[in-house]
Length: 560
View 1: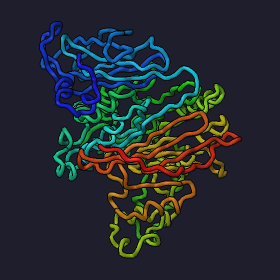
View 2: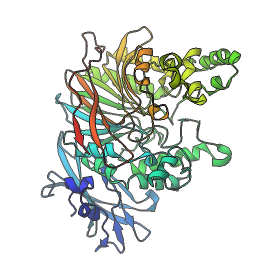
View 3: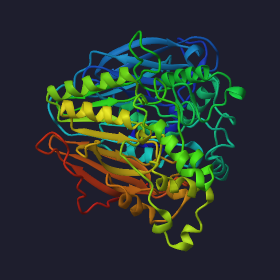
View 4: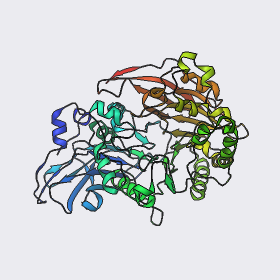
């Protein structure tokens, strides 16, 4: 058996990598197989967990696979084992929902075909009760050509992470000439297939490429993941009926493309399939972390999200028409029927928040894709020195000047669905929930205090930066934007448009801590990591959230 050691998991030793990809003759299978995409686990409960792998056979057809779960890394005490079959109909991926486990326990797992074994992985079930601390690494936006997955490597090196939360953009759909392609050519790290992902085979190939990365494999093998998708797992700025990056004339039916994207995701990710009778894309679900918290993973793209609206039409309008165009756009934005989650998911969340509070959970955590805080653009012309403002491109100016016409910062966020956001806040208030909203999407670090329409605090929001994808600071490298954004927005406490990394969220009975950890570079596998900022939120006496506090003394550095 190939045992996952610290060196082997992190790619430090050639022997570990060779074992992970070894091909040997099998006694029970006629061909040869390789486990070249690692192992993963996810969606843990107090008694179950998904375990995953993918094998590459040299002969097409069904392949029998055995699996085992043990209490020890040497697999001396195997408590669950079984056999499954995989084949080309699911791209040779294997996903097992292991039951009968004990709550709050560490387990080790592996797969085998004949005498060929996979690397082993570490997973953990959720506690059934109690309020012991629980730590999660929060990630999003890993674009292969933009650089190396150093942040994943940092997560894998930690020994204190109970789980990883991926808030989407696990892959990107673009071809080699698309977003990130120029950097990818410089690094010799570009997308496969070379064209944009549209068909099932395209998405499968793209997942296979991402999962070939040893840093990502190590992060999956080190802890269970809670995953939900954003837009790039299908197409940029996707919604239920289409996407900004989908052209029906040349790329065919959106329904077909969406179905292909969802199928590949369900094959390649360690997530539990939706309950029978639900749409395949209905992956919203919840998890109770003992008496400490309930984690709600939302789906805000493919089920019910309203049509994509953008500020482009305002920027392109004649100066004397901009305000009128902006007013017409905001009338659409403020439509009370506009929805991000859809009525069924809204009702599910409202009931879930109420049940979580009534059962005594300390926190209600939302695994959410897009920024929830109310945000408007700062006035760059006033905030930047003249020589720097002169360097801002015409396209960027159109985007950043949107606040002049009463437009929010980003209509692809909850600010493009204000009535839906207010409905969520009404549900949170009725439940007396203590909301901790986790957000990806923006490639930017945020610490926000959330307020409803009446100005009452409804919770806090921590937005993680990207694993690799370029942020606003890459496109407009002026350090002033980091303080101009909080200065222009009451709800924004902290903003960093430059860093790459992840957020370490520590849930405690009496407070929530968010530590923003950044890597020094993603353009090279040689880097160091450091703490960028840390915030603490404590509950107040009336069921809302106290203000965010920034403790002194953060700045620890670790080597890469």
